[in-house]
Length: 338
Image (cartoon, rainbow, N blue to C red; front, side):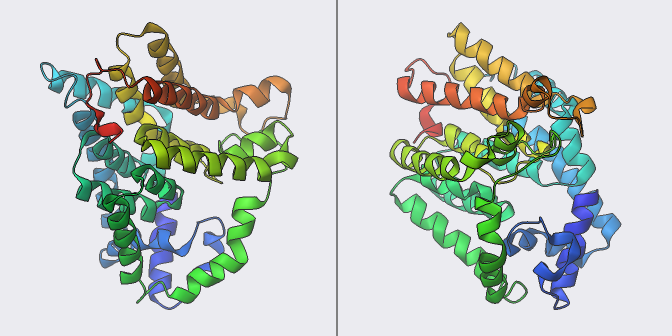
């Protein structure tokens, strides 16, 4: 669990008084808030902490499958849950998460709950927790619209951050904003190989040697996405956009959209074309082509190495199509939009 070990050690070092930006293994670790979820793990030894993280991740797969099938598969829910959880467990991104000790499977469980509940307090708290674990999920705040739910989510987020000030000092956030934030968001990627692990918009644009357009394209898409989500309150699209617009999107991030795939398959079960496209997206988001690592930027390699990104684009198309039609025959109720 290399990534988990790094965050665990970072949390211990920060508790000891070290500035997170001074740590050599936190150069691409994100803002200081990402350390907060790892602070409780420092109360136990590293082997125990690893075990807890591993068990929590495995249980998150089962919980997600059980939760996302709560409406559509009531008669065969147990069997369907086992099938879906097994398929997810066999996917490369899920196994990658388990091997690295990343929290994305836990975020996947949070997303499944967000897509299946109408409880506004749950929405507020879970959205803030997801954004605390990985800040790319801040865009989900826009999908709450102008509402009390948004206000509660913002209060919960800042309260959680504030509770960590005894360890993660406000000056750390200021330093990150001055030294890293602009570079992380705005700097384009000039690639020497296909950069297969990173499936972000930034990396994909660089993969096709279009890095000059990245910064204006990023801000245009972010502004458009924010307005769309704020107006429509479309959580399905919001989840996918939180990955597509992230400055960094490693392959293990994509498990977060697996509940979106099941939701779309359920909502579109009477629409063959949408079902086929969603299944294709699912395949693109579950496979790995290991021979692509460090390959040269040939035309075919550029396309093949972007399959996760293309899978997310297909999901965006189906999500928006579903939102615009709001099929009244949909099995999953409109809690994914309201």
